[in-house]
Image 1: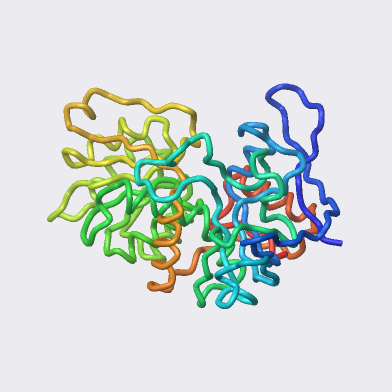
Image 2 (image 1 turned 120 degrees about the vertical axis):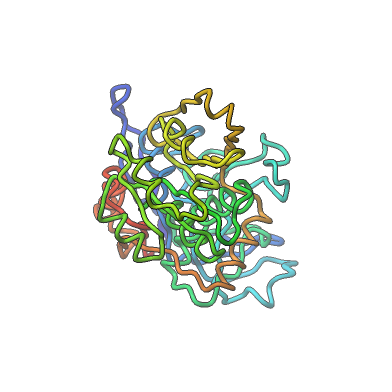
Length: 355
């Protein structure tokens, strides 16, 4: 009998909610017309999954399998599948969201946009299970050089990084100076890898010197500890004399970032913000207005951006960074340990379940 990993509803005090994981037996699905059945081999965690367990995310489901990122092999096709010849028995990546086709501004209809895994609108759709049935349009052939764990690490972080850097920043070009905050997280590391492959000069921030050192080993030009009051002055000294400013910041932290970064950004520089882990708001000082700085919100991305991102990874043979894996969907205690890594920000790269 196949299994699925969900969260279990429990009574908790307000502000102290942390839903436990639950492994459930589920029936094996059957693909309908135009659908594929995918046997999942690996699934990866995101901060979104931690927010679900803390009841900090909308439309939580206690029946839908968790996780939005997955790698699997197509083992059965439904009637009328036009892709059956080239996808059957082949490894694929699942698209992590639904309802956004190609508009660069955002989903064509926000009421139809959703992310799979652990939420009501998607019912059976989540990657923390043995089998999943999806429409044939919602998979991409996995780049041949990726392992199952690496493939599962790519969808959400890769799509978010691609949109924040390539679509939104306007500075994904050779020689541009890009600051990536909070290095160690999946999106930040994917942004680092994409930026390097595009010829950008990447600088990073972290609360850990070890993570900065590891980022430099991957190709970052340098980094600073954001906990230091004058980190922006330290970063200024690292910038090249011929281009002593930042062109863009790719940020997932929020907080007082702009107060510091405005002194480093060029006039008209871009802050592409995909998250606010420090808090749900950001300071916006008058110097940013006078300097014509632009703050651009960025989320996951469209189906077209997902395809472009996967093709870029294939062409450049980029391998997502993996922090730690756990083998077995039934190893619930060990999977809980992956969530502990997320809570403590111990990871450097993705946390993966090898199903």
